[in-house]
Length: 516
Ligand code: NAD
Image (cartoon, rainbow, N blue to C red; front, side, top):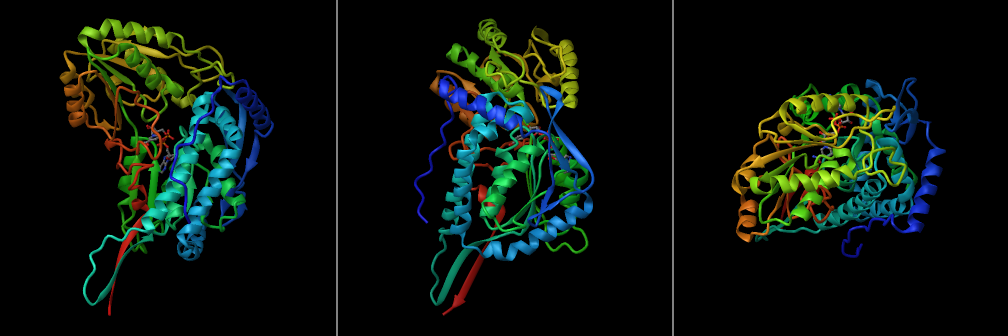
């Protein structure tokens, strides 16, 4: 199978009237489909469990997005068994055929892009452009991993040996758990599922409770494409019950997780235990949180830096693992930069993201709102409140874009992931101290450095210890296939989604030598 060279999928321009009209239509169509019931999907069968969990619109918590069967422990056993019964045929299906499924899925996503985006506006509160950007990323992931699978299959790097026919090849691992978060509900589930499946594995997807409907629509796409039953199974339900049961299961071969540090570390520990009947050490990838910094020195284009700080801190309400939640400003730029950021952040429109004018929607749920409000109190003690600092009245989980100035590098709001629209501004003596402060957390996911000095830029490339380093651009907005994504230290296992090595997590290399 020959595929055209990979190209990233363009996003929609919502300043174009036709695009706006189409999206408004999609919002109306999707609205009429909200509140439905969704079963589990196990071995191609639709399974009801007698108990439901619901996902809500965070802008209007009384609006139910979907009601999902809550999986029980016995459903975990059934799903794992369904995966293993599909595995022999699926893993032997020619890789070209498996890659072709991803290419066809990408086509479906392109066709349904407006609806999929609209669903995320309702279910997780994404502003239009954020939702549309995520759908483009989904297409990119499918197209990228299809090509990577073909490339992996054609690698032949071994040295010939006299008298032997030697071969080195990659085999699928088996049945794995994919545990995904709500903040990129389509892209992160897609990335982990498609990479696993194209490599010949079968998976059980356990999505976050708050974004279960988006996950159900994604699994539907693969079912409609005729993927064999059992290759992708869907278990909606509570993380601490179903996620944990999956991680512990002796027949689970690998766990691909994206989510919080707290849960990731717990999975790391639990997955290391070898249970009776388990014949392997589970392979685990954990992509976790961040406390990303944007460092600005006195040679930088301050206007560019201020726009990047604002976009990185407040895009999708600061609920991105790559959010730039710390701005580290060299002393001489501090007052000027703070003024620029406050001006830009003050223009952001907070509200219901089904309105195209809204740039900051709600945070995901009541628990997130409470956690962020706690940090706003902590911030008042640790810094100088310069903007925002409160929730907006009403029932939506709306929090004002908030900026704290003069924050100490070791303050809690400068060290802990808040996952909301909260920016801590830190003053540095010079750019070297700025880089040291940037590196001074447990995390190491993304980071930006703004400077016009080539010598300093070279130094930043050496010293800024993050998985995704950006020079003179924002810390968010990685493109798959262009900026392989994954973090250092407590940000995770650095498997680099959308990169050249990602599929290697999902395979094991076999060396075969035949004496001639
Ligand atoms: P979370 O850790 O609360 O949940 C993630 C998933 O784990 C969900 O499906 C949840 O149901 C499940 N889960 C919960 N408890 C579990 C348990 N005990 N055992 C197994 N599974 C369990 O995270 P979240 O709130 O959904 O997502 C936000 C977090 O994800 C943030 O910390 C963010 O930085 C991080 N994130 C990281 C990346 C990355 O690529 N590094 C990308 C997106 C989000």
